[in-house]
Image 1 (cartoon, rainbow, N blue to C red):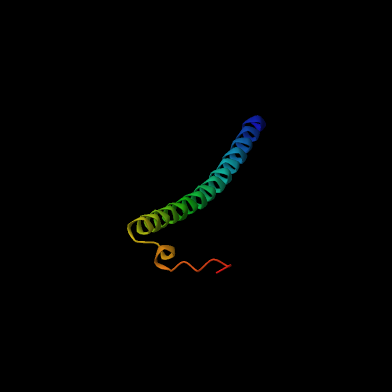
Image 2 (image 1 turned 60 degrees about the vertical axis):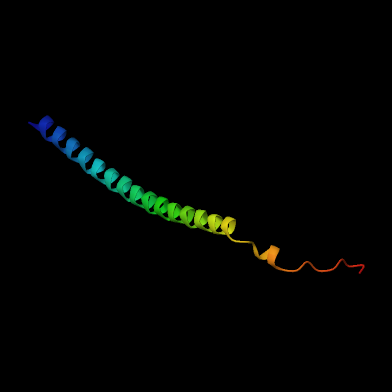
Length: 71
């Protein structure tokens, strides 16, 4: 009977360890998903800025070029 109790205790410890591991992995997965969503949004904003800069004249082309220093 003692071996059954030992085995049961060992199994309970393994299940508790697995539950803790699953919780830790779940937290990490959430953090990675949030980071990925943030990076995706930043990429979308960057793509919009690139499209805007290609479709509109740049500020540099609108500004007059200063005279050379020796002028």
